[in-house]
Image 1: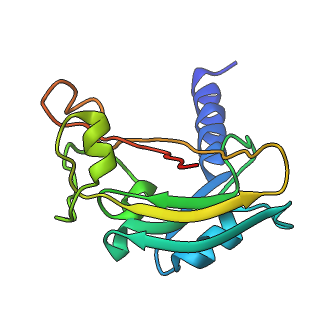
Image 2 (image 1 turned 180 degrees about the horizontal axis):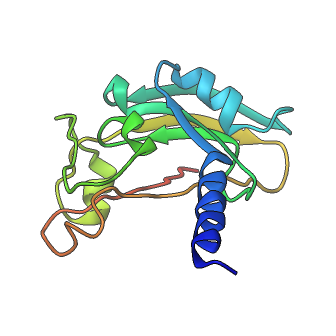
Length: 162
């Protein structure tokens, strides 16, 4: 078998895998719409939500939509960013970080023992009529590994008050 032919077959399969997945982010959505349409299951399964609020820069909140034959992420969800939500689409081919020059979060600063900046905070009250709840989330950082042990770090919190 010709080595050139094998290389072309591998190249074809590489490009077909890239085209088999899409990742898009829209940031024109409102917090209430995102919570009701993308945080809750379609039938809301006994969850009552009220007092939805978002604080942060408008460009830091978004909706992601993901299609892949691998099913490794949910099909849609909410993006909260310390920079521009659309930047999560990539490519991440540099060491630059985006800042929104927004305030930090008191709770995360207390947990982290450092002052926080550029927070995106989605808050809501909810009550479950069942004995359990489940949230699926993924934390990612554009700044890893460039800023590890440099005195700054991304932080994520899922805080609950009872």
